[in-house]
Image (cartoon, rainbow over all chains, first blue to last red; front, side, top):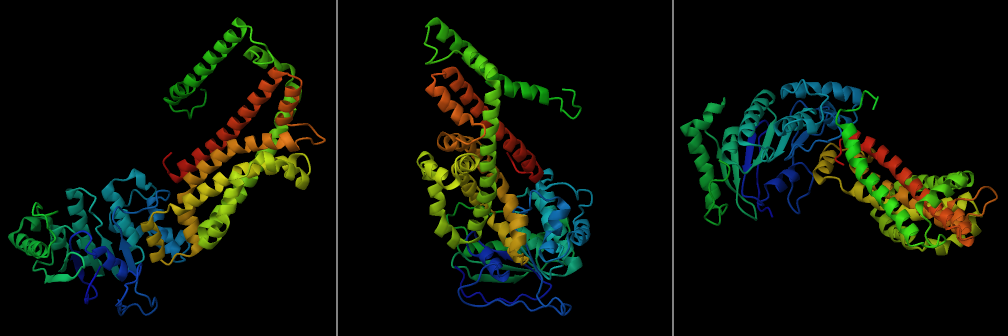
Length: 245
Length: 266
């Protein structure tokens, strides 16, 4: 379902992967994270310079709908990846505090996921991804189920997290404005079999605040992505409005 | 309601949940008593509830002994099912080969006519508690295996991905993901099994219950039948049902506590 994808993503960049539903965006993420293997071809991730000890490049994945364990508290959910990698429970819990502070969830450590709002659950999910200090962060339509305002706030937060940590971020979305707001580089994929039909470096300032969304440059960039999607059969029945822009 | 931890609404909740079945019971009893008396139904066919209650009272010592004996067999069989059934379900979930190889034979335990096998149990285990417990086990183990397996298999694939992504060891995946996910389903299996274990014990007693000690409720039923003591027969059946209900209530209570801790719905 993917075809001739030849792609190099620089370490520390923020890439948005756009495309119609079912084009293989998520599959590509699963290949990158080695959750699935491609039938042919290869994917390699070269470790950045500071990772002489860990050897393996640390990778984290944020799924749609947070995917927290309902029987674990917020703190224990964030500590989970460390526990799974062999860190003691006590130490894992201790180290889980920092990423929770980064997403500004200091006062809900002992709450359970069903006591949080959708946006808060998503922040816990991001904190869980950050706890292992990943050098590559993959996000698969993470905010798709949230309301527009919550989504915009999370976008702004994610952008800031990336600026402070400079990890490589690959963000799958079908929302044009979200892609334009977040990324340095946007890749637009065609319908199945998925190919990359546009590889565009967004011409937007480094500092992006919420005012940017009302900016003419921003609208122009979003329109550019829209045209690429439209040209390659994303909106096939003609009745489509611009999906989530 | 002296318990201070009771929530204000819970007394009313208790009444609203307990009152309807209690009312049904009272109405049925009154109707039953009335019909039996009005139409002079022979007592050896259908005794009035008052006869049954008085049989429970006058025969209280042997009935209590029989209840205790049956309870032992049922509880022992249930514990056997719970431990073995959960273990087998877990083993099946870990190995497709094991599951394919053995599941049909586990199903056999479900379909085998227990009355027909009971004589074998007497031959193998001797009459008495052991054969009765094994009978209770055979009848109650399959729902536990099936529900444990279904529960362990119902893990959200994205959570499985998460665990794989961090290179989780099998032990961690089982303890921290699969078992907590499976518990609601396992509890359903245990609840079903708790009732079945009493049935299995009674059936077992019909064939294997002649031990040197006190006889169980199944034996009471047989003896009462031979003497046409239908009131006593009803009394024994009543106690057997109450025993099943009690076991079910115990397992349900335990399950409720566990599910609340796991924040699972239901």
